[in-house]
Image (cartoon, rainbow, N blue to C red):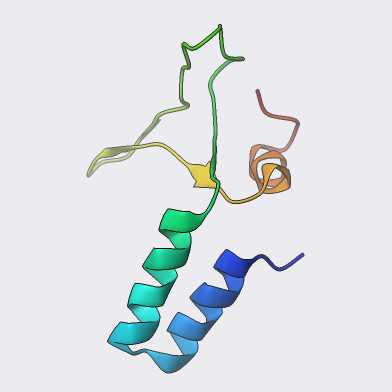
Length: 77
């Protein structure tokens, strides 16, 4: 399933313009994102899954819950 975020990214890649890039960031900012968690949330407290890379620590967010499961290889918390 292609999402509006996918479409904006494809347009940005195809056009390569500053306007297309800004449109992608606008779509990203307007999107509901799902954060990959280390464990199930406890009330309002969450524990994001942190990936330690040589350059930085990062967390991952996805525009569809199914993409988290696809990335994680199972249903993610």
